[in-house]
Image (cartoon, rainbow, N blue to C red; front, side):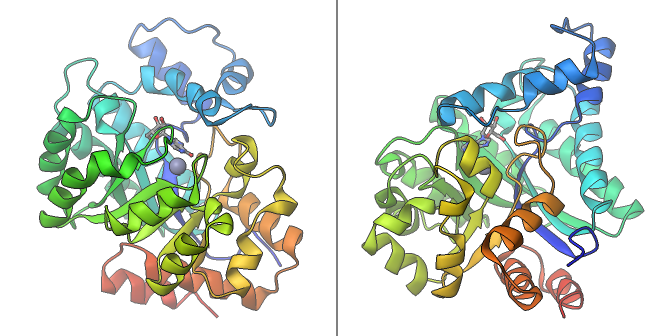
Length: 331
Ligand SMILES: O=c1[nH]cnc2c1ncn2[C@@H]1O[C@H](CO)[C@@H](O)[C@H]1O
Ligand SMILES: [Zn+2]
């Protein structure tokens, strides 16, 4: 299989985890932000999470540097454009990018400006390349939740015009869903789709609750359902797609090593799975690499790959027109 040429879909990709190292340097210089180094390899090394990361919080510490330069409308637009450009150049046909507007207010941008800038960068890339996309608004659980309703309201003006869904990201405590039920309901009432990070560092019960309490239609990672029968059955029965991010799962110790990733067992048992990057820079990866890793590790056939591609289309938050166009790439 030529992994580069395959049509690909990425449903789980963080904007702030996918910034080009050179762009961090350019933007820091423009904004008079002092960096620990101006060497592109050194900046890259500071953003890439090591294979030896002890846990998810250590992995998440890699976002501080890129987030520091993502505090202006121009920087958000540029980084968004470049992410879609990078993905388009490796034949990603559809990309759902997520980020947390709450992390980009340090210089006084409003949530509306933050969201509009990211969407503008995406639209510029859509006009230039053969790629389509949408934005997911992530709420980070390590910040106070009182600003969540403002973020939800700020995205409403662009709903289905570049913004499609609500997410919860950040470190994962057991039982977190209980604290976010009213916010997820508010988002759904206003027209957002819902995907939630769960069962990554946390337990399978978190996945069960993300679906039953928050109404998640997709789950970020979800690997922990392998040890939780009730959650496993709920995912299957409700046809909830798992956004699998193999490299990231190894780095954060969600799984000990790639060979122990449950993606193939899930796939063979009819659990909807998708293949995604999570963070192109922090996880030092691309969609080409993630597909290659999964196909080679688990001996998947081209037909298996296209089945997974079709599951990504089906479970994406794209419009029916875009889904139809994406299906044409499937064999
Ligand atoms: O794999 C992950 N699990 C949980 N949270 C994550 C992951 N990757 C990134 N973020 C968090 O999401 C924020 C918005 O993009 C990032 O700043 C990071 O804190
Ligand atoms: Zn993620």
